[in-house]
Length: 148
Image 1 (cartoon, rainbow, N blue to C red):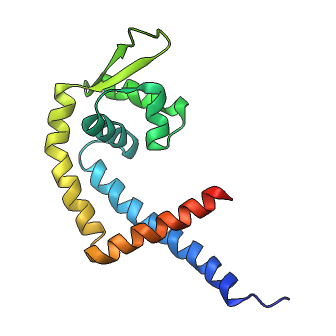
Image 2 (cartoon, rainbow, N blue to C red):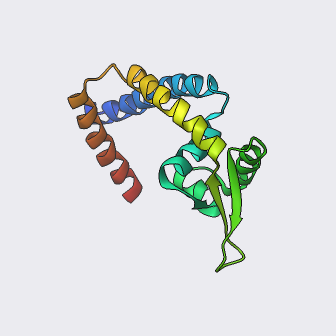
């Protein structure tokens, strides 16, 4: 068996550590969001519309990294709960917009501050400077992998 270089061993270890950290963080974030009666995808769609305004349904999937086939299902569920509405684009019949309703905005007004507190608690293992450094390092790593 060939010995693995220290750099290769660290690459493997980094992948495992990143994966486990992400799994642990996602578990806690999901638990927080479920406590508000939503699943992670529903929350992501509402959060996008809450902060960015109405969006073409076809683009929502790209922005929250979800398959377009799943977006229709999630939008349907949120529409049934009266958290969002659909609106046809006046210039292009192929495009439909989703926008947050008053009921959806009130929900997000209530739960988003609590979500921020939960995120602060979940990520309290790092101080502010460490978070900034981590953000830069992970961006660098992500851009490199994307360019391969």
